[in-house]
Image 1 (tube, rainbow, N blue to C red):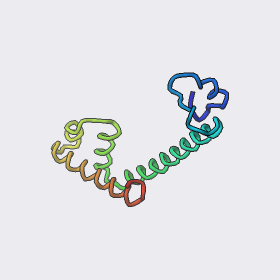
Image 2 (image 1 turned 30 degrees about the vertical axis):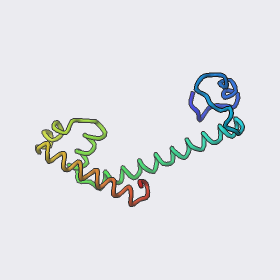
Image 3 (image 1 turned 90 degrees about the vertical axis):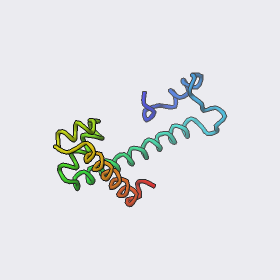
Image 4 (image 1 turned 180 degrees about the horizontal axis):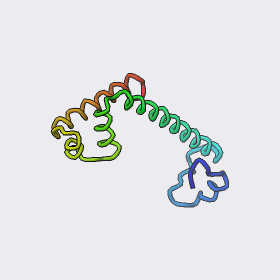
Length: 115
């Protein structure tokens, strides 16, 4: 059951279950449901914005840097394996990944998406 689709009736049925702490915190069940749904909607908006930004960031990279970045951080491949496939040393691949992370961090800060 997702929180987004949780009804007040379902929340009332869960009141006595372990792990649900609503008593003593104030507010009605409707307020809790609305607050949780608001947070989920806000989180979804942030995910969409971040996804859009990451797509732009990747599009602006060279083909080789994009390949390196995606193989490491999307597919989770080891640096030495990626380096071998690109014909570069693992050290050079690590340095380039470090610079790509720095560039991403700087750009996210500039866009106000990261403090």
